[in-house]
Image (tube, rainbow over all chains, first blue to last red; front, side, top):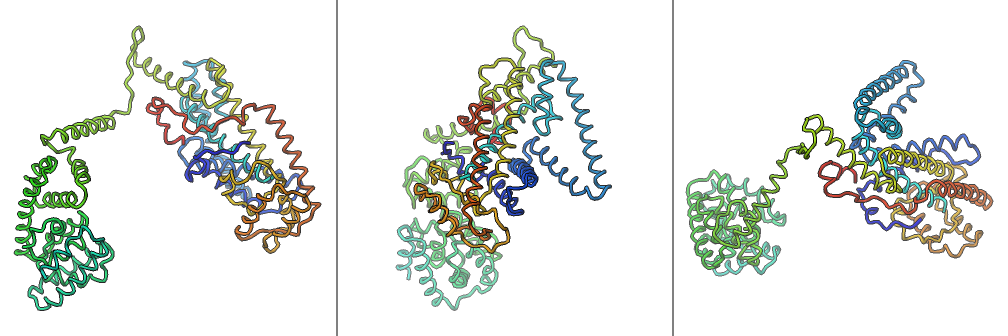
Length: 174
Length: 437
């Protein structure tokens, strides 16, 4: 991996640096919580999940609410977290699940509407557009035009994420 | 004392501090001389105003606040400071008041305070009259000076200000003082700045500048005032229906975004057609997400050193690319509740046991980091065996990942980070610019 001599890296307010600082903080927190024992795969899996969530969360936080996909991702993470927390009490879990279901119903309803309108114009893209909508968080409630814009930004952020995580992993394995 | 004061008031050569000191000394002398002065009423009224404003001046006059306050109150507040520094003809004006001026007023804005003082002061008449008189004098002097200067800029500004009141005279004085004090070009530029909108001078140079300025401003204004919607014109032989126009706009937007995505996604240049492009984009997004998952799994498996500084990632050049096997990774596997201590010895053990001499430089860096690192470093005793056992799984993991990467993603290493992939036209139509960065 060639060293990145990009001056943008040194910019403290760039997306990359924001994501890096947040992610590292989360990582140290995760690693500090439990001692790392390579024996148990279950623990490793849990840690993997936590790290993945931390990566997504820190990426979404770095973008703040400027993008639909980041907002959707943050909302999803929060709702999942609250769902998990409220799993003990049945009432709140039911409430959260109903909220999630209603939102899904709403988005699917919107999607149907959008599909009918978009279907008239670009027939061949509906299938791919659906796939893309599933991939990009928050993509269900967007028309094709905005979806493409969100996809572009999402790709950019994902590449940043991958680069940073790769660097971190490289350093850790040194 | 009048002979001494002009020298002190020629502040052009002195620094601010010297000025202040000189003024303070002088004012103290003056104060002693003028202990028995009338107009104690002014003192009470103006002292409040002055003290607050004097403090705001240059911060260095704190000690001299009261002194200055007394001083100025007793004199009939004649704030014409900047002028005094420049124009020696003004000596006839009260020197005591001037003493306060030059110290405090090296800049134009201080003028505002003075005039504010004179305006807000409830003392009245003869102060105001004196101020007015001074204003007249200022204008008179200004005419003299502008002629002396012979600069057309001054004339232009003078014409403009003829109509104006005290405020503008103060602006003139400020500008003139600047002009005289500093270099002429400086003052001119400062004057032409505010004059771009208003000046109607016949000076060619000024006119050019102002015309360009106004034209630039007009263009800027017109740009700002442009409506949000984009005007679309139906091309020849195309439907002029509003629906179809909107459709065309939409299609153009979509095609633009597809082009942008084509640049982002590697390997999309060969593919033509929106369907294929979309497929490619979908594959790429899926691969990126999978990569994130793999990397998070790798991070979960590999044990980090807890004393990792964030600077490491940015100071890539510090660590040579010769990746030394730094098996300090394995150290943190043991208990978590150990008292923190700097693992100086274990690292050395690592080095000796692994027999690495190439990595000494990076080791030194690491050691320095560990020493300066923050608090809790939960480390147990270092075991050579654990070190080696830790290395191996990560190595195999790396190998597997490498294979995966090589198979799936060809260009991952050469993919440039899209820092500024925008063209001007694309940005203007879609408000992406600042958000995407």
